[in-house]
Image (cartoon, rainbow, N blue to C red; front, side):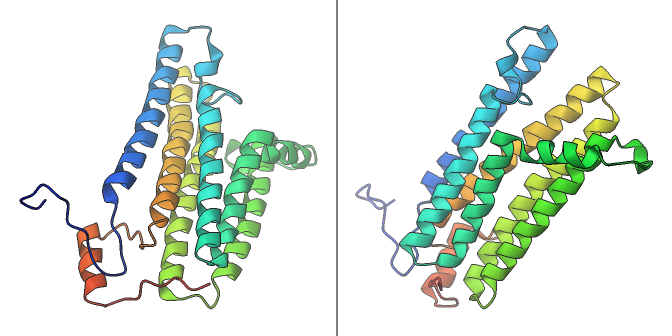
Length: 249
């Protein structure tokens, strides 16, 4: 702040509006935590309001999750159009697939078809339906990974860095959606473990999706969102001209 109470504007190619992006992240995560708390309270008191369950298709928490995937797809798509950075449109396709998979239960439907054809003993006590889900999810992940990898070929350093960080968040989402889900399936017989692992799986997915929305929102400022660097450090580097602010199509 200056003596006159005005916030000084930073010169150079970067404009920093970190307060807005922090507020978006806080709103998203706090909303996630509220849904998770309501889910826990419903389980503890065994209330009949099933819509409070975050693991229920069409429940309040799931609808909020659908909304986040849609926001992420729109934000990254708008960024690609506004900056003619068409490579980023590949991430819109990824987020739209996440939305479609959640809304239409794509991997569950295809997974059941795979499970019906399983005629051999599965390791780790996996059920055929779990195996079918895993095969379907890994196939979709491979196809989307090829799409994103192809989109970043020949891109500049800033674009590649943004792709790496988006991929890290997508992997985080996948760890909760796949790894935690498989672990959850092994302990469904114990009511407490079933609840705790279900909370880890679905609550983790909600937090990871919120981080994706936050990232795509902050990307609108056309500044790289390196997790390990503060905004102040990025500003100094920009002003010293140590790296380019341009985003290559």
